[in-house]
Structures are given as C-alpha cells and as structure tokens.
Length: 226
Image 1 (spheres, one colour):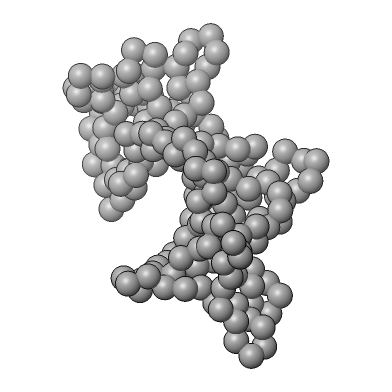
Image 2 (cartoon, one colour):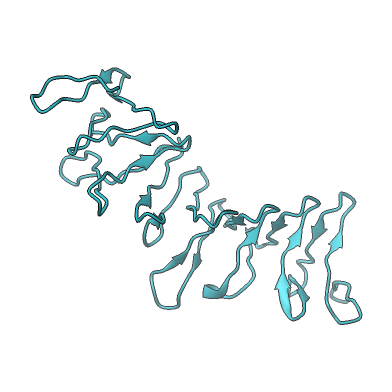
C-alpha cells in the first residue's frame, strides 16, 4: 500500500487537502506529517484561518526539533501552546543545555504562561517580565495571582520593584490583588500602597469571609481610601 502524499504545484510546493467543512487536514500516516513549501514545513489551517497542530500518539506535535520548535498561531497572530497526552500545554526550550524557555506570545507580542489541564498557569525557569521591569504572576485555576509564600509563616509575600513600588499580582479581570496571610485574610503591603481595579479606583483589603480591612495611618488609626 502506497504512502499518502500532499498535492504539489509545478514548483514542488505541497499543500494540504481540505475536508467538506473547508478545514485543511494532516496526513498523519506519513513520516513527514507537515506539508513543505519552499523547503519549509508549515501548519495546516482550519476554515477560519487558525493554524493547528497534528495529533500523533495522542499528543499535539510542533514543527521543528527541540530548541528550534515553532508555535502555531491563530488567525489574529496569537501563538498557541500544543498539548500533551494529558491535556497540559507544552512550552518549548529556548537554548540547548540551558534552563531557558520560550513563552508563547499574543498578537501584541506579549508573552503568556502555559496552563495545565486544570487551567492553572505554570512558570518555567523565570517569570514573564513587562517592559517596565515588573513581572507577571501566574494565575491559579480561579484566575487569581499566585504570590510566592514565606516558608516559615506560609503567608504570601510582596515583592518590590526597583523603583520601590509593589509588583502587584493581577487577576484575570485586571484587578490588582492583595497578598494573603495563611488564614486567607488579605493584608496591605508595608509601603502603604493600595491595590486598584482596572479603572484605577482603590480597593480595600478583605478578610477571608469578605469583611473590609481598613488601612492604618502613621498613628495606627483606621483611614478611609478615597
């Protein structure tokens, strides 16, 4: 039985076949799963022009070898992480022999974390850094930032940026979130900063059962945030 092949044009460039819905598809029976154009493999696209990975041995396979792997992109240009057989997103190594990883980027070239099968973001090597020198905390499956914790107290801890301001954890809706103590109560950072929502409105810290915690002034008196 002959091995199936992709159609070629007069220059020898391959193209993917399409199904009845207009989606291209892979011939996974071939050793070379990807079609080749001008000597370079490329991803198949669905009818909406989103690239997608072929599935081989129950996991999605990317173009390239080890540190040269290339992410597929959706129609808007956002890179897409492939999934392993368990449903976890996979990140690509950046350099040979180094604990360096290549985070996928969105259509605006902003890097983002891969998630596990439960939707929790994972850090590989180092945090993702913003242009202002701050870094992004990964989010848990509820969409809340995962602050680092103190080994002794088990409280979440704040990190200062080089300008002396707090490197806030931001939730999936864009709200700055307070770090929490082991008992689940939020607490204010030592420099007196107040967390804000996406519009810039200041927000109070709260106890684990939702009660407002007022910040204290220099005389340890409760003060209202305006």
